[in-house]
Amino acid sequence: METKKKVELQVLHFMKGLNGFFAIDCIGHASAVNLVQVAGLTILWGSRLNVDVGSSSLHHIDLMVIVPDLNERLCVTCLYGYAEANEKFKFWDLLTSFSKAATLPWLTIGDFNQVLRPEDKLGGNAI
Image 1 (tube, rainbow, N blue to C red):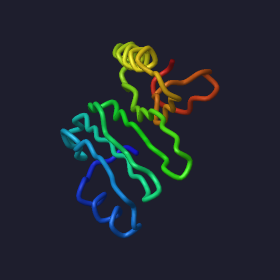
Image 2: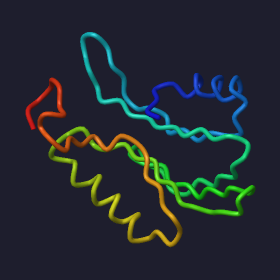
Image 3: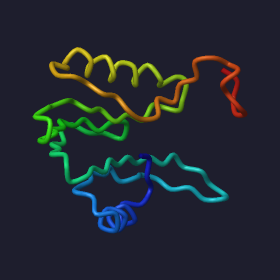
């Protein structure tokens, strides 16, 4: 989940009875006059999961998830791709590095900021 306000996430966390969360605070700000890049990520999980957070950045959160009821472990990588065309390679380099390191079942989730076909894109800059 992309986020801008960690405090709101803490409230949501307790209101929904979730077991835990991890958040990367946003940086920058946006206003009607001046738009500065903002970024932030969070992941929330329920009480049936045990979660250990590994590495994190403005573009990823890497987790080890244990499902005690099933005695299963898996890696989960939450991703937020670069919006700028000239930086998209950084996202794919990051994804490749996690892929090479995976020794357990691996799930990737998030917003890759990628368009597979031009007809899938509405508005904004041309592909």
